[in-house]
Length: 489
Ligand code: GUN
Ligand code: FE
Image 1 (cartoon, rainbow, N blue to C red):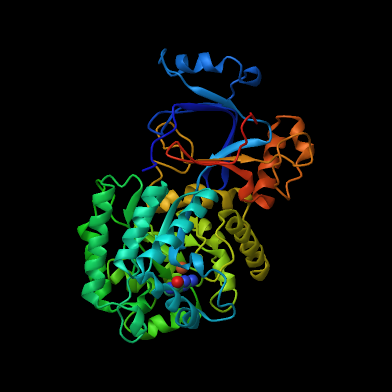
Image 2 (cartoon, protein in one colour):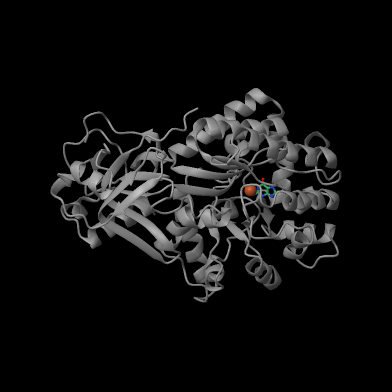
């Protein structure tokens, strides 16, 4: 199992992370030291040493460990380190059907494209193959933690947990629960008791393979209220209460669902569950609306939904790519309103499904685009989002939703080193290796190490970079991706 940190090691150069939705911190000339357990043991900004000279000797003194032997790597001006990305909503089985079903409204898309596809995951070999590719691709994209929906099959869901553990990606893994005899096809649904027992089995499995939940944890996953009977929602709510402190005081098993995604879906939900006036009421009634909830989409919230989400400190997974590619219309979530209301537990999701990308860089850009559109459509009332805000959602917002903010999401002593080394080297700027990033003409900025130059390079990365710029990826100090050629440094 590949989970051992490569530490101790250190980097000297620029670190960039979020402090809050609107506050970015750029640590220049910083030293970060990662220990043998993959935790950050030292961060020290403004270290003025020519080309990193002498650091090798200085670090043991700073650590007050005279015998420590720490490898130090000095970053170049066009390189910087950011926290790993957190994908807060993604369907692992849909990795192999992404992009299909354009033009269909959500419920028709589920019936015609998604359910037939997901039903194939009753085959464990197929599940192993697709999930392995999905997790490996996620790591390549810098996704160090993902919150997954698997299929409804308990075995396949356990396989997904095993694959994440094997590949060393942090993950919340959910068995997708759907038992309603009238809203699910016969070939893709379970009995209520099976869905509950399968979820319990998944929880036990995750504890058996990773007791402390360092890498893999379960998440309660009613697909959405439409797919579930009231009985199943009741039982899942009860499971949540039973496992409220599974990973320590107040650190329970979270829950996730699709929430107020599309008008067709909201209408059908409120018709099926006639006694509730909004979806927040519904999930609250079943004990599935709390500070451990990950609510995907939240595109069309009523006033009451918004108030309850805030009161109950729920998290929101904003999925701006799938919001405009599947479902029927322009349905992007009002993120500016969330932030203005003080709701900061907001992350980003690739969602997979009908969208076009498994890259959180694409999701960040799409979040900007839909926020621009919302500003225009609201005649300026909903101010657009800034780059800092989409970067916050991709890195620190997710951990706040998932209760991991003390462990990952930014650079602090004691946190795990889940990180990405970004390289914005221009392929035409000199005699480098044959790095082939396409859009990153950053020539002008390379000359100096000023804050303005670094900020420009960071902005260009967000707006025009892709996975080729993610040259190294670590989870818990263990390198998951390394596209440097020998001798480059
Ligand atoms: N609502 C219920 N299931 C799904 C799904 O798989 N994708 C999306 N986008 N919405 C859903
Ligand atoms: Fe989804």
